[in-house]
Length: 250
Image (cartoon, rainbow, N blue to C red):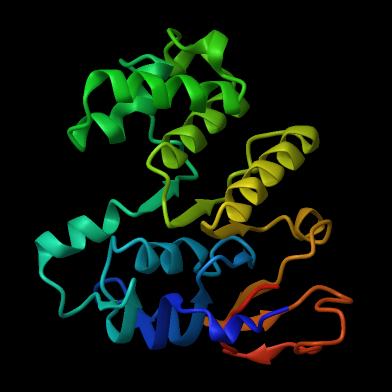
């Protein structure tokens, strides 16, 4: 098995910090690499800063200090237009779904393709496949307010995946669903990862993360700790958590 350190980093943080206004820093001196094609859980209790780290990674905010490099580009020095192009390579599943209630499920899922200028036939083909993949075909013409929380989460995931992202970020994607659907969602993320997408899932559900052999990043006191699950990796990688370790997956 090739060492993940040989794979290029999709994202790299070096002593990155984030504060809001004059408040104390939410994140402090975060250093980590996300290797291309890796899969990580980001753990920590509510308020630990998981969403803040995802905002840096998704290019929604620049770091207050330090360096964040995504797809080889320093987000602080990259022009706004170029940042917009980079964002189109990132799929984001928001904790609050952020679906447009006046649009159907089909139109919500199709929206990222529509704004990118794809022709109608290509959009229809891609959406049909994505709705089938996520089990949403029969809800294509339904509007989000008529759906359950779990169904809305599936729509949000389908919308994030429709662009075939190089990086997929999910913020508490299992918070509104039961255990059966949570396992189904993680299986879907794993399928996407096997196709080459780098995946980072933020969750406070450690019991769920424990059921999968993926390394964990743990936020504590504004810092990131590397926390591989027990028994991972099998004999050829770090066996104990390391502070701000370069994050790589099996």
